Length: 404
Image (tube, rainbow, N blue to C red; front, side, top):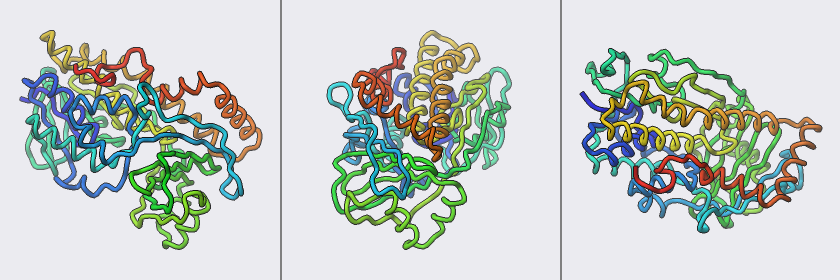
């Protein structure tokens, strides 16, 4: 019987396994991943990693490998306009640095992050079972059993579900969710441009939803382009001329000629919050516990915060000789993470509803609010520190750069 089995071998699942194993090498930690062994190498996406998360990756010993492939975000610009407006006035700008001049976030290719975490997991001696799905979950009181698609069964004192927003483990455990769809989809693609971006990220609030331009290494940017679902599906399926024409209307010409990657995808957007983050012998982390709108770029970082809190909870309990899978131990993790997750879910929901429209009274109110923040440096600094994850008084050790 293993001590902990992580279901889901993405960046959150691998980080959860690594965080516990590095702090408690004697524990038997295993990972189950449904995708084939090298499927992760075909992921074209990039993610924004906040300063606190890079500190955790530094503790893992993987940030030095990831950093050369990452792009610091040096500045953030926010506008509010229509796609057809000839001028997009800037309502709010954020300096991209926090403590010690460190960038508040980096853009990191998913393949770089997963590749580095996989190497570290292999070095730490964490077995990874690829190309197998969890088909059953049961809790006998003293252990949890997971039935796999290859006909085998694995047992552990604790199962950590990191298997995404449609988590099968969460559903099999009977944990309910609060869920609703926004009727929007996020188009994700990469754009090459003629002029350098200087590490500047831009978020244009358009009536259909936010259009985020996030800098990558070289003269490239990652896009998260929100549209109504029917329009997003039509754009993704359209030919390059139609797609590039619509893209140029939103992207603008400040970076010169642009060319979009042929690999473009649309992901439906919604809000999903698990009613409980734990059950006997089970903990949820990452998208299995919460799926939020990408308007704030905090989705993955919420998952990293889960990892840091859960790992500290498990390791502290193990050092005290406690059973790491009991509900009494896991309640500490749930208490630590639920309020922050609920707060972020509500915040992104309100922001999306406030900005994804062209109602004039709302436009006046939100533009006044953005302008007010722009004129209050202390408030701006608070918001950027909050986004970077450096102001939380009760941060887990890993998010402060300290080993558990």
